[in-house]
Length: 468
Image (cartoon, rainbow, N blue to C red; front, side, top):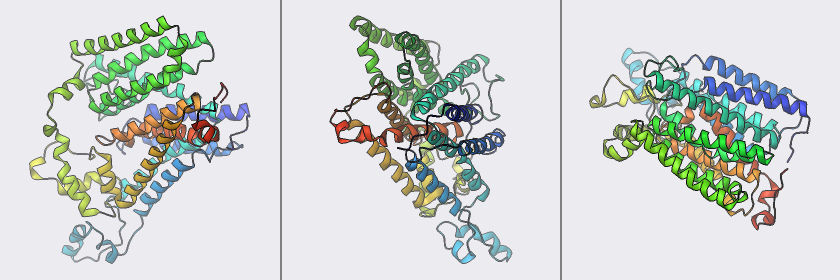
């Protein structure tokens, strides 16, 4: 497959660079706004990391990440096309654009050449933001498979830091100085994020990473120690998901626990029957106690919202008819990436006016079609097709091993983050977009492995060893 040569010095440099990139994403990439100061550091750092990956001579696993890279390139092409100035006769004939020509007509001025995007500056910011997932994919391609697996520890460390910071924020209350962004959900355990929902989704997505991290331990004693650490970390993540009050986070956490159990079954099978039985019972009891303690201490907001808030009263659904109207008016060219807020203000009903504003549609599928039009929708369809085909391949496999387990983790992460995007916008944060790109890399890695996708593997004849 064209794996990188086993040069330990080159691989170490690339791994350290990739770890630094992920660390920067955790520390600086937790907000979705394009005007936060942290992006002025993160984006140039991502470019510098790309330079390091490309300058360090040696083979690259381009074939592994060619599908995610092609999809990212297609997205960049669509955004760039929205910045190309068009003649007035063409621009005014675009769906939804004619109404914005009225000011020049009223003033008696000639119509200028303008791009498709109604907010070119925000569209340009959207284009620049792609440098973060691009750097992650290039960095993934530069690493050997074993080194790419080691990134799991880096991700879990960042998740743990975000969880602990969230606990500290809870103890400090709404005026805690530990919030990293000037606009945030103060009073909630947002951790390294500005939005509690994004924090909750990331914590939930990390749950199935824990048993896989335990399995990376080479010795039995090491795995035992890692097992206790993973158990404590998992309980902390569950507690914080409840405290965040995100229904999407809770739903993903439930699925994440199931996926984690599927990945961790080899660990249970290797344990003595009595130990395995009591471990499962004890884990269930501790999880139940954690939920009960959260309810007793009034940090059960997610549960309260699920059972107590009628869906027809959900405020986000009230905006949906207006959003659908905007989508219809601008289809199939779109209003321009990043232009949702200024465009929505021109359509917002008087009855919805308030000191608050709708910065995003809270449904990235709808916002994607609104801003990107038909080309963006087709690109999303290709991504979903690739994900579904990958899932079907993995479901047909009768083999195990770390390669397959990392593929299943990537499959879950991609699906979970896309599902969360139906009710929110986590992928608009650089941190979550970096994790999404990493998940695509892990999924693509197993899909491009001929040992796994060969007919013999599908029939269960291939048994990967410890070095697979």
